[in-house]
Image 1 (cartoon, rainbow, N blue to C red):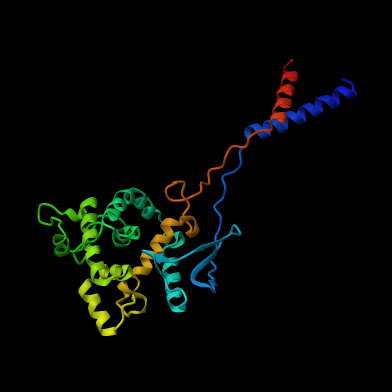
Image 2: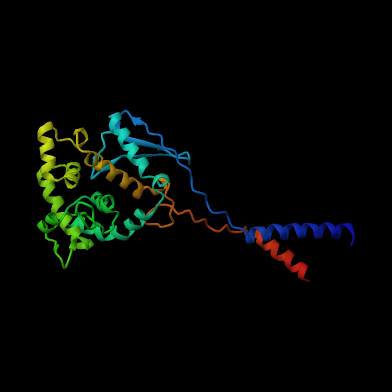
Length: 283
């Protein structure tokens, strides 16, 4: 074999190797970005929060429940919110069952909430109350919405030795809507409604009267009720923005963008030359 033929063969082998590499390779699975949370305030809008992500992007968002914003200008309130959010991250919870249950039951619950004029954010109540699991608490509250027997019966559910409709998602959601609507007529604020759902309407009224206060975030309440709206907001955050809090799913219902890579296409000219080289070798 003369020098010219040797050089030609080496070039062909190099081209074939490159073509095979491009034909058979696909990009590695995109690794999950690491996000760090850096909150800052906008002087013109103290409610607006900035999330600095590991991708170098800044995402603006508000902590809110039923269109009522967290008064983030208060350091104490913001500290409480951040502490609650931390307890809901994947690093802390180490489970994705809340996201799975949300994907399963939100399509059932949300249309009922809307039919009764209840803000969509109340879909997070059963997630906080029961994780959308039909269990029973030590106090006797049961079902997805954790109704006490008397309250359940008062809003149309059958609760007796033979049947317990608190464990029926659709029927218990209808009852919850009626209850929430009655609370809103009484309190006129969705955050107060959420607090009343947790502590009871009469108990909340006594606290409001004794403290002469009608702002949930300024009231002194028992530990569970004082953190209840923060828990709802935190639940909303991790369900609506799972990637930002360490939850990495391929379910398009839970995250906006997919991490599944696209196959890399070979350049047409490279493909043509590779096929020619393979043809020459076969001859």
